[in-house]
Image (cartoon, rainbow, N blue to C red; front, side, top):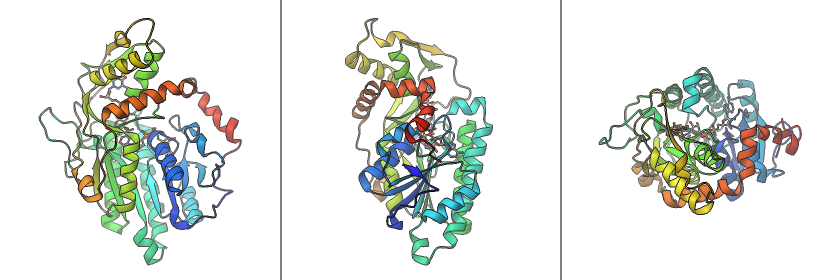
Amino acid sequence: MRSAERLHPAMTVNSTILVTGGAGFIGANFVLAKVGERNDVVVNLDKLTYAGNLENLATLNGNPRHVFAQGDICDRALADRLLAMHKPRAIVHFAAESHVDRSIHGPGEFVRTNVNGTFTLLEAARAHWQKLDTAARDRFRFVHVSTDEVYGSLDADDPPFTETHPYAPNSPYAASKAASDHLVRAYFHTYGLPVVTTNCSNNYGPFQFPEKLIPLTLANALAGKPLPLYGDGRNVRDWLYVEDHCAAISAVLDRGLPGQVYNIGGRNEIANIDIVKTLCALLDELKPSADGPYARLITFVKDRAGHDRRYAINAHKIARELGWRPAETFSTGIRKTVQWYLAHPEWIARVQSGKYREWIDLNYGEVA
Ligand code: NAD
Ligand code: DAU
């Protein structure tokens, strides 16, 4: 892994992708898949907020196909420089503030990164794209990774969200993502920028920051701490294994049509209480506690403000048009996930202690 300012990989330009937020949970899984399996070159622009962790990409250390640039997507000059230097065939935009609870406590950073940051990237992409020759302009893609939360909350009997479901965001996080989706849409209709938007359900898997339900539950259970469930624990989410989400984004990148929106989901509608009970049962099997079943730690706490009751995704369009389907069922994906967290106690410990921030200096020296 080298500084973007010092390295221009001697690879064909057509295999280069600019990924934003590639040190976060989904972004890191995507970068690992792209560099590891497909031999693409990834230029990874990430600010390394609390959620960005270069340790997630440690296996790419020294790999010239991964070029890391620490920086802010709100920095237009940096975006211009990276685009001019690396001439990527696409931008895959993950960078965002992503945690609903944090958006309730401090919405400002969500507006700055998710709205202004996306706007800045769109402007940089537009300026870059307009200078390309016709063939390169036709090939270029701006893939915007968004969320099902923009659609709001469903009642128990409502059909799952389709791509034409009206927007009704209910948290500052969801509203900031909705705003970014609208800007992306406008850049297609107004300027013809070849954008594609994905709206995905809840992801789970390796490298997820332990502020989100599944890794928080696992980390707390292993530490013998309470497992907090908001409200009555009956809110429903649709869960998708992160590698399946990354495969869907690859399909969209390769075959998605400009201006289109694709919903991505796992067909796994599960109530939070059942998620936590499943995790407890897997831990009872794989790492039993001398103090008794982990479910003893389940604790109901005050509900999240404005807590959406149910999300569900209709993913027929991406299946029909791009041939994507999830490879994992919930039971196979969640078992892999529990096994990964059990096999990486040091990753959890360094994230929780903040030591992962020292990883950059320790392992890479002066990166950027
Ligand atoms: P994450 O919080 O784990 O990672 C976000 C990454 O973006 C971090 O590496 C962080 O350092 C980086 N970042 C934040 N602000 C930045 C800025 N101003 N400039 C550059 N980099 C910045 O998020 P995640 O869960 O991996 O989500 C990635 C994307 O996928 C987000 O856009 C999110 O809205 C979307 N999404 C997430 C889920 C999910 O379940 N996690 C589901 C659907 C969609
Ligand atoms: O739907 C996609 C979204 O999924 C993404 O856009 C977001 O970036 C991602 O964070 C996720 O949002 P959620 O709010 O659904 O995820 P979270 O893991 O925070 O919460 C999942 C459910 O569990 C939700 O109903 C709230 C509940 N919960 C969460 C935490 C952290 C609890 O009951 N207790 C908790 O401690």
